[in-house]
Amino acid sequence: MNDEAGTETVRIDIGDKTVRIELPDETTRIELPDETPRIVLPDETVRMDVGDRTVRMPAPNTAGAHRTDNSDTQVIRPPIPPQSRRTRRAPAGPARPDGTSAGADKAAGGPPIHTVVLPRISDDPLEELVDRMRPKLARAVDALQVAAALESDGFTDRGAKVEYGFADVFALAVEVYRRLGPPLEQPAAADTPRTWRAGLRVLAHGPLYALPSAVFPAVLGVLGQRSVVLALTLASALGWLYAGTAAFAAYKLLGGNRPRAAARLLRFATVGAPFAGAACGFLVVAVTGGGWGLVVLAMCQLGYQLAGTVLVFYRREGVQALTMVPAVVFGCAYLLAGPALRTPALVTAAAGVTAAYVAALLLTRNRGDVAEASGLPLLRLQLPGLAGVTWYGLCSAALLLHAEAPYLLNRLDIAAAVAPLILAMGFVEWRAEGFRAAAVRITRLSHRPEDFQRAMRVLIARETLLCLAVPAGLGLVLVAGLALTGWLSAPGVVMIAAHVVLGGAYYSAFLLAGFERFGWLCWSMLAALAVHIGIGAALGAAPLLGRTAHPLTDTLLYLGSVVALQGLFLYGLSPFAGQVRHFR
Image 1: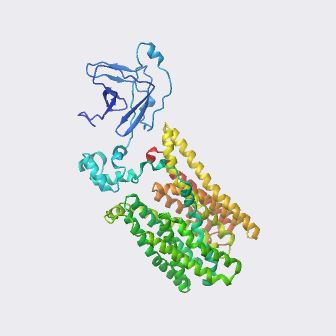
Image 2: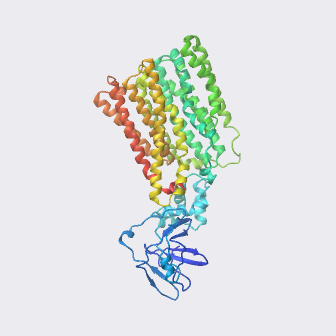
Image 3: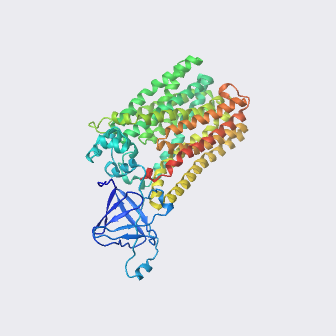
């Protein structure tokens, strides 16, 4: 609160005393309501609750402190050393006594006298407002609820404009809601240990992505290589961004306590997927020729991707696997037995895609309460995030597919290099899911900002190395397989190494997406694309531009571009990972 002179004043209860601390500058004045000019402290560390913050203050050296005596007010002012004139943010967390003795003060005939210097909590008044309102709004589901809470707390349009620079209370509420983060339906979720079943479910995501590839050889034998590769490439890219956007919107609705709206959105997206695939198939037919088979193939590809998204959303990965097991069995048998099993492979693949699609639609029925509030206002607030995740999906698909597509028809060793990354994506996702819980644990164990930042750097480095090690192990298996079959080559090994590096890069990308840093993600991937294609064009090694004479140069450039991409992702992540406020 502010007094008439414009000085900020904080009231603190110490025992049965009420202490008022005025903060006109970095010198703290403590006014006591009686004539006792001392604060008796049991140890060398003081904990004070200021608003909803807990501030720890180590006792400074009191040798130079002086005291002003007054019948009503006792003021203890320490001299301010030059190095203390910089504003610092006080770390949150429990106090840690340093165990030092105050025996010298006791020998002088009384309890120790300490001068208390209260550091500033934050340089950003909006952050202070968010922290103060957080207990009230921990489960806020939209900005309207935040606006109502601010108005009930005495905020007016004039105050929002004068104190925080926003046009009105609602504009201020939108920014406060954004900084609050997702609603906390279960505040102790970070402490809940993850079960092995949950870990296994997430680990299975990578192999689930790869299940339809078992049937691709049989499809190639019917529709022809060039058209099928183009149709699958375009359909996969479109499905990537389409499914990513739908899943992001559904998770936002679910986090906003709108399960019925989330289910309806997923249902509409799943119903629309085959139509989007048909449009993609017709485009391929118009460019390269072909028949209805390409259109059906693109429809199945989009339908399966959206069905898989819904099944993963509702944690039904087992259903997805069961629907595709027959297709995988007959697809592998086709590779061994030849054309005699082509028809069973295609029929079981079509049946598996249909079963997964129907199961996904059934899962979206009877979700939530019929009286649930509309999710449209919440989605309107999330439009920037929706646009960001759509562009991120597009850039991510382009980053992967532009390097693979030129080699799909004639270089199996290079085209297969993506397999370790796909199989390891479930592991990368699993490690990224546990990042926030690990960061929250670090906040509870750290007593200084430096401790927290150091521990976070170790955490990110360790997890990044793990996300490099798993695809690297799978890559070694692939190298051994290619060597046994006579397909191993230097460009293939380099391309496998590039996809191993992408495993670590995608871990950082998952974390950046959690902070909704989609702009940085997109620009970083576009920069990597520009480096790969631009330098390759200058050196005559750009397959997308028809220059395919130097595959080793092209793959080396791709490896260098994804290493640079990993560096950009880590650089973009560093400001967020070092701030405690993101993990409260």
